[in-house]
Image (cartoon, rainbow, N blue to C red):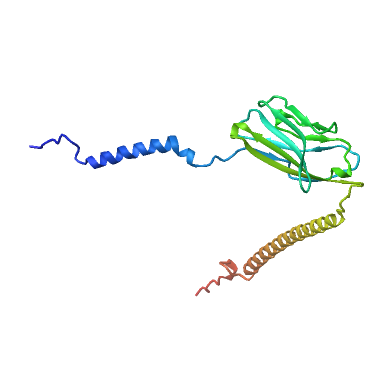
Length: 236
């Protein structure tokens, strides 16, 4: 007769399992606070961040921002950086995605907002650039939705009397030489293939001529089962 135990055979296993479940819930609800949250906020000025600007012309300082979490009351500023200080040029806030920015500060009338908040573009326009405008410009963004996460990018501007043009003669010559060599190789390979094809055809024709000529010679000499080659024994 089998006896039934009123208690589990392995009580320590049950207790251990309950502890694991409790620990799992504890880590789920509180564990994330032990790790830093990576900010998704980012600013970018494009692949090129150094520009030459002709004296007396207008120039747009490019800048875009991106965030995966979203934003509300996003703050952005533009600075002009010297060796010692940062001079604030423009400050504005974007209340929510798709709304126009509310500009709260501009240093002078030469500085204007030239972006599109719907496209997350916060570029600005500098009118009538002067030699004193040469330097570093900083695009700064702060997002309260991401626990006041911050990010910035730098644009370097050099105001000149005359724009320098790059001499591409050497590059063009190198490209032409490389193209010529590649074209010559293609022609050589095509000629080689044509010559091999002609040689193969000539060889096949020679083989056919040899086979046919040897067959004709054997027939004429009475070989290979020819009736003319068989001698009839004389009658007694």
